[in-house]
Length: 123
Image (cartoon, rainbow, N blue to C red; front, side):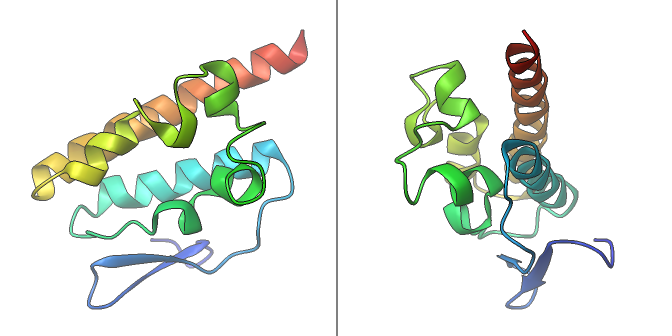
């Protein structure tokens, strides 16, 4: 993890904690969420990802708006609270191989969400 990371690993390397500034816009939130999942992908020993408290998108859209406005929800209304996304697989994963694979898929998914959202907003 880089020195400028918005996250730190605590509790003997098994828990991720957010230590950065709350994002102020959707681009910052998406970048923060992608950063989180890259850390989880690169360190599958981390068992507790921090859920919504470490998700840039949740910081903007979950706590006050029940996902309304979140790109994941807005692009596909079936994804309220990230249901049906690779996050669900990660939440249920057992062992490093499953955590790595679900985190890898979540990074790919979030990058696609970012591209789709940017395309939608540019039209």
